[in-house]
Image 1 (cartoon, rainbow, N blue to C red):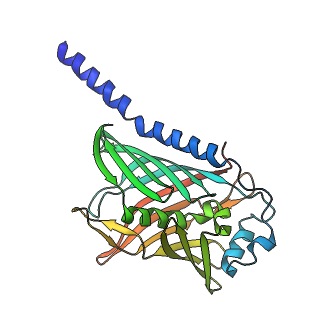
Image 2: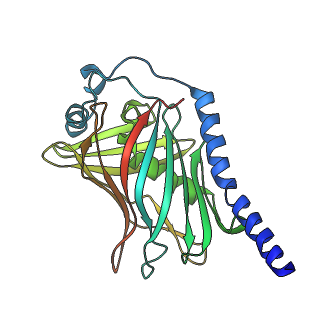
Length: 277
């Protein structure tokens, strides 16, 4: 009886602890919304996108943003999301929640899965005020990772740049500079709090973004050492939301290792909700 009671108490403690990072996610999202609110007004107009490279202008048009209100933030709803810990590992299904804010480059993601299908695993990935941090906890209290510092700041900023078109108001901000390459390719640099990273956006003939490539993201090895590895984010399966905006329905992330591509993240986007209150 005592053993069963002890196990029940331990289980309750674990399950209660496992909600802590989700509570942090909600609190941090609420604080960001309160901090900036509805920063931008007006609608996207041709004169707004005129300084942008040709393929970026085309993206605004084909996705239906011209004439739509400029957004201050975006909440991404995901489904069928999978994460892979290393090259030889199996895909782990996870729940994922994400929020991006535009006034100052900021992204926030919460992920939850089960380690080996058993113990609950939580992660909170944030870039805010120039600081990136990836915090991962097992069973709610065992810290598996707590990555921060310059390498994490750079990597988080690269991810933010890759997600520019989740909230296209990003593309008009002074902290992002664009360099035209050709009719289907454009490079961009995002600079914030003393850190600058770059990447290249590749668009297809229809005008949709297909992939983003950067050499400025850091991979951290088992010894905690960071080194830059080419990183690619892909977008596909575009569809029209109820509001008429066309968005990508699938995203994936991969490292370009010497042994070949290592895809470690993939998931479907259900919807993009703008100007969350």
